[in-house]
Length: 142
Image (cartoon, rainbow, N blue to C red; front, side, top):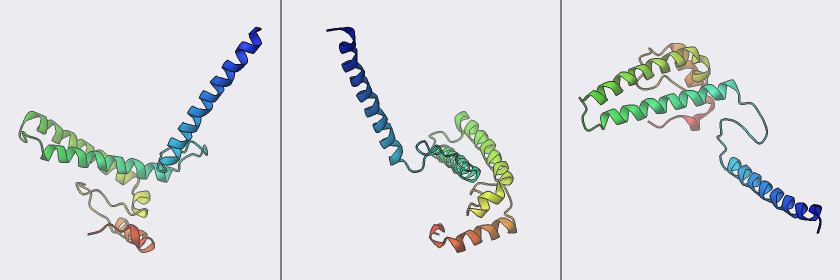
């Protein structure tokens, strides 16, 4: 048996393993429809989608940190004080982000978050109301 007959079955086996792994990878991607980057179609995400995703992440960080401060076992300790200072920084960053991208966010029904220090403007409220008139099912429950 020469070298060629030994190599061909090994390469066929490697090809099967690689394609099997790729199929598993594609199935994992298909399951998650809300991925930030669309791998299969090689599409770029829109700037609007990126802004909305980033705002959602920023709000989640603020809410998580605020909840951990409130449920901390020593609310007046050094850890809680440092965390509340960091929370103030996060809130200021999120407010600046909302001011810079207010047209995109308000046109997609996003108001300034609950802990925001921004005064709501008439333009933002009008944009949000227009969005909910077009999409009544996406209005948050009271």
